[in-house]
Amino acid sequence: MAITSFQIRNVTFKNRVFAASGTFGYGDECLDLVDITRLGGVVTKSLSLKPRDGNAPTRIVETPSGMLNSIGLANIGVERFVNQKLPLLITLDTGVIANIAASSVDEYCKVLDRLEEVEGVDAYEINVSCPNVKEGGLSFGASRDRTEEITRTLRGRTNRPLIIKLTPNVTHISEFARAVEGVGADAVSVINTLIGMAVDVDTRKPILSTVTGGLSGPAIKPIALAKVYEASRAVDIPVIGIGGIMNTRDALEFLIVGASAVQVGTANFIDPSIGATVADGIAAYCDNHAIDDVRSLVGSLDAGRHASVIDSWL
Image (cartoon, rainbow, N blue to C red; front, top):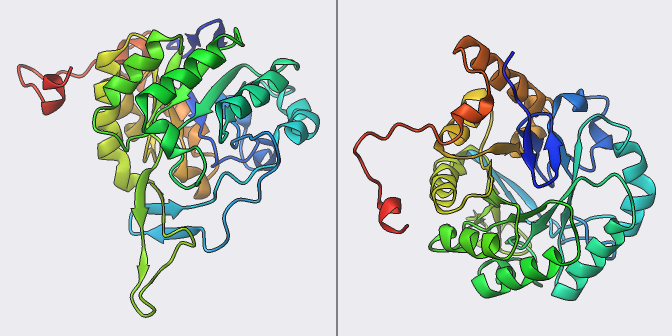
C-alpha cells in the first residue's frame, strides 16, 4: 500500500485530496452523500467576519465545459461557524481547513484571531483572489504587495499552516508564489477561478447580475496545470492544484506537473463523492505502478529537453 499522507508545516493530512472551498459547504451538508473520512481534508466555504448574503441572482451560469459563478462569498460568518459547524467537523476523521475571506487586512486578522481561540481548525486557506466581490477579492490578489502584506501580517498571528489561494488573473503567478513564500506562507493554492462572463443575446444583457464572475470546471484545467507547473518550479513550499479536476487521471496530471496535493471543486456539484473516489484512485494507481509513496509522483514530469515559455520566466 502506497504512502498517501503528506505534511504542511506542523500538520499531517492522511492523503492529498481535499474538497475545495465553496463547493462542499461546511462539510456537514454532505455527510449523507459521501464518506468524508476518505478525504485528506475539507476546505470550508469562505468565512467572513460577519454573515454575507452574497450577490443578487442570477449568480450561477452553466457553460459548455464548466460554470460561471458570482456567489459573492455568501456565508454564515465566523461566529456561527465556530458555534454551529465546527463542533461536528472536528468529530470527523479528516483535516479541517478554514477558508478566510475579507475586504480589509484588519478583517482578515479578526476572522483568524477568532478561529485561533478554538480547537479543531488544522490550517487556514487565505482567499485573496475571488473575482466576484467588489471589496477586496481580486484587488488584493492582483497586487503582489498587498498579497505579501496580508500573508506577512497573518503569519505573525498563528502557528497553524497558512495557505494562500492565488489568482490566475495575473501575468506571472510565480512572482506571487515567491512573494508569499518569502514572508512565511506554508503553501499556495493554485488556481482560483478565471474571470468570465455570459450574455443573453435576446435581451443583450449580461446573465450574471454582476456582469462578470469566476469560471471553473474542465474548461480551465489546461490553464490551471500550466499555472501549477509555473508556481511549483518557483517555490519550495507545497503547491495545491485546483482547476477542472473531474477524475483520478486529472488529479494525477496535477501531481505530475508539481502539485503536492489537489482540491476537487466544481465536480462536487455533479457528485460530492468524486473527491473520495479520486483519493482512492491515486492510491490504486501507485499500487498498480509499484510506487511506494505518492510523493514520488510530485513533479515527476518528463519534458525531455524541451522547455516551455514558462521556463523563460523563472
